[in-house]
Image (cartoon, rainbow, N blue to C red; front, side, top):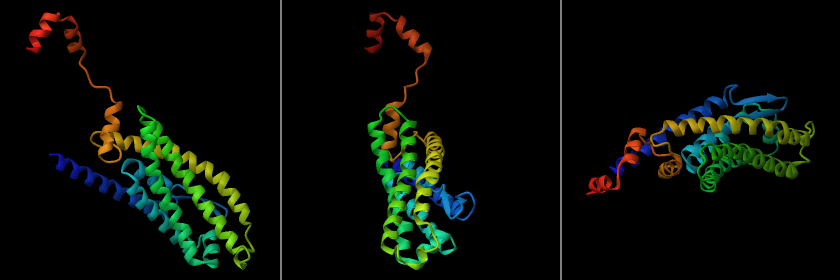
Length: 242
């Protein structure tokens, strides 16, 4: 019975991960995934990655984050202005910059979410709000950090001549970060909470999901039964126990 339940949970996790992967692909190549502001793109692809990392676990976050990074590289190849700038300087490092920060973002979001659950006992939505915010902030910090390193190495390359690189970085750290953070908190947390309620047992992170929600749920009681138990005398309770 226990093995059957474990297999069922694995199947649910694989199914949910596949659905989220399809959502990443859909958002990547439609206006759903990006908000273009001049040469800079505000992405909402951290949302399905955060949901997978929180509801399924770090391995799903790593997979979905890597997929996000691969689609970012494809976007760069297809003509994204900043992507074209980076590809012109060094295609290999551009691939690393697109993929590695997003993969780490998904993995670390899943790991940190598990810690949030342990630290914030008795709460269901607060760890998810923290997880959604973590995904957005990690995506910004890791990508901008990599981008600055890339620029410092190739700042004398002719491709950077027509771009205000520090202007792009400032835009990402302000407008992009705020919008992505808001979307990550509101959408990721609310969707993850709904999925947890939908899944059998109300769970997150495999077997640990049941334990988390079991600790925070009040056992259902029947008011009529409570009233009857309160009216019983000690002798009647002893006879019932015998």
